[in-house]
Length: 216
Image (tube, rainbow, N blue to C red; front, side, top):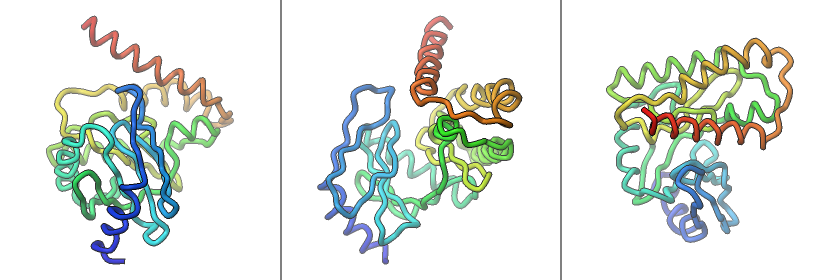
């Protein structure tokens, strides 16, 4: 399918049939999808992500908050170019991006479902972040919900904040947890951990970082 035809599907069949809302600036977008042909495959802090059976190798990321950030994400993808750790930007519209689909499960969901996370995944993400720095970007807001693994390799699915300045602790803190707790105690006999516990840890970490920022 040509990109022009795919764009027509997005603008005629997807956008009129979805509603993106939010209850908190710190929680993901809530997606209400009434489309018959488009499937919701995820949501993040800014957007919902959708796929269509006619083009399974592509996804559409539709912004639901801060649409001005879309232009910044476009520039991030242009700097990244083609790299194995990241998606590829094919095209974009007023409030959406057309991207290469990255298969896999988030590290957050892997912990919940008891799926082992090999060290190679962590090293792949480190290599991808180093590449981003080498092209003038600043990897920001990289965490267990926007990093996926597929066939024991790691990929970064959300680069929307890579233009920001300053230092983000999330990935380095996640790695500390991986090497100090996960790898020695959980990796070999990985139990499934209830969602509410992992989500409580996620929210507790956010609260801790906000309080620490205020104190500092």
